Length: 363
Image 1 (cartoon, rainbow, N blue to C red):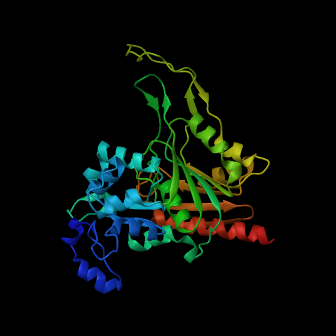
Image 2 (image 1 turned 180 degrees about the vertical axis):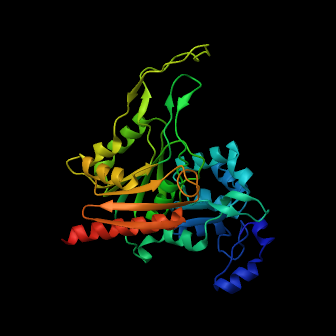
C-alpha cells in the first residue's frame, strides 16, 4: 500500500480481511537483507496496481522509485497490469495519455478504465473497473466463457474521408455498439482485436485496439488480419464514398454550386466474406426503411453468415444512443433483440454467434 492508500483504509484492515501481511515500507527491517522491495519483486508472479492513480502512472512511466510500489515496479520482471482510477478530467489530460502510451510501450497492460459516477460526484471515463471484471481479465481460464479460445475481429465507429485539409465526409456513428461488442467478447473469453474509426470512447478492457481514420485504412487493417480470426463482426459505419481527389488547399466558398466528384470505397464486409478461409462473418445494417428486405438482401449478396440490422433516425436506439434493438438474420432463421442497453444487446448477439459457431463445429 502507498502512503496515500493508507489514508483511506488502514493496513491493519487489509491484513485482517486478507489474512496476509501488508507491505508499506521500502526498506523492511524484518527481512534478512532489509531489501523488502527486491524480495517482493522476485517472489511475485504478477503485479496488479488497482487503483492506479494518475500519480502512480506518471511515476511508473518516468521510472521514478521513491516508495515501495514504484521501486517494486522497476525491480520486478513479471507481467504488470494497471487499473486506472481518477477524475474524468485527469484521465483526458494529454500528460496522462502520454504516460499510458509510454507504459504500454514498456509492456504494461492497461485494464480499463470504465465510465460512470466518480467519487468527486462527476460522471465520465476514469472509474476503476469493478474487481470482478479485473479478475476475469487476469484469470480468464477460471471460468470458460462461450467464446473461450476464439479470436474475434471487430470494427467500430465511423470513417472520415478527407475533402481538403479542413473538411471531410463522415456520419453520426458513435462506435458505442462496436465497443460494447468488443467489451463483451473479451468478457466471454475471446481474444479481441478492435479496429476503430475516430470516436470519443475509452478502449474496452482486455482488447487490442487499432485506430484508423479512412475507409481504406480500415480495409487494409481488417484484410491483413481477418484470416487469423475465427469471427469477424463489421459493426463500423464505413463511408460508402470517398473524394475522387483530395484538394491540397482549403476549398473556398463560391457563389454558385460546388460539385465534388466521389468514388466508391472498397467493401470490407464483402471482401472478408469472399476470403478462401473466411471467419464467421457478421455484418451490420443501419436502415431507415424496409429493414428486413435490405438486411436479407445484404446477407445473400455478400455471402454473410449473419447480419444484424437496426433502425436509425428514430427517437430511440441507433447512432449515439446508449440503447439499441436488432433484427438478426441468418440462413433459414431470424430473431429479434428488443430495445436494451447496448452491452445487453452485445451479450445477446454474441451468445447467438457462439451458438451458431458451436453448432457448425459439431455438425
